[in-house]
Image (cartoon, rainbow, N blue to C red; front, side, top):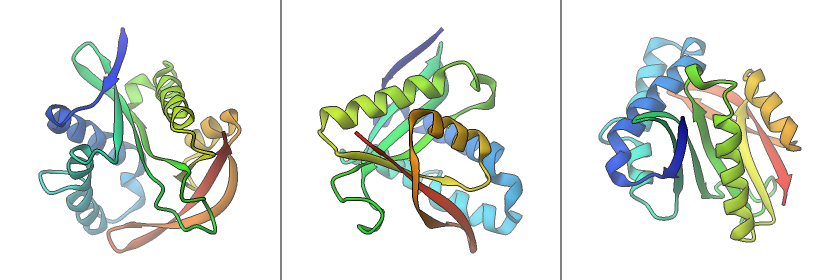
Length: 171
């Protein structure tokens, strides 16, 4: 049975390990081992962005657990996309990761519903996010919610530039 809660700093090591595993499963084959190593060092581990953001109250995390095991999480952040793509007062869904074992089980939907509810409570006019152009599963998921393409973003995986699509949903 899946239950959800706000993530705390104490969840950091387990959340970090889950995020790393999910990222590699989804994107790892699309970059060189060197670029993957650079990205992993920037994003995860003791000096990584995930643990820094988890300790920063400007970012909010929601974690989904199956018993004691993390199945997925969502991260809301202040909007960091350029103003010509997204208004500065938009909510930004920075990450929504679900491990493959829970794909199709409603975990992503529950996390997205939390993110949208939180953005509406904060009176954000819109939610924006970026998604890798080759992530067909995620693109289809966001499309079902009514997100529409409003631009593109260059996502760096180490030294490799990947094209992300910027999506927006007016709230």
